[in-house]
Image (cartoon, rainbow, N blue to C red):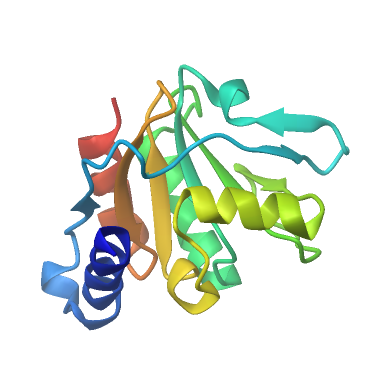
Length: 161
């Protein structure tokens, strides 16, 4: 129940916050929010959360192409070398993510399990949020996908560890 309330609050921020105030992210200190996954990349190689250890990871579950493009631009602004922050689109649908965003997929049950770990089981809500995970694999914050690339880059710089 608490997770649902937090996600509803984050969604409301993401879709109703005016641009001037849109730089807010929602930090959730719940250690049970987030978790591991085992999926496959576009080369069909297995990928786990552990493979991103030591880097911040932005996860998205079905974000729109414009939101993914803003994310890619934000990554280029926040971490030009790509040494600190990675991003992954988790989906069962065929997709061509922009540069710097890794496609992760797998059987529907595996993707559903990954989404459930981040309470991203409502596709309409999950598509409006990015999930920031720290280098230790622990969830840090939700970032609205509606932010501009500059706003998103600011949030990534501020929240990345």
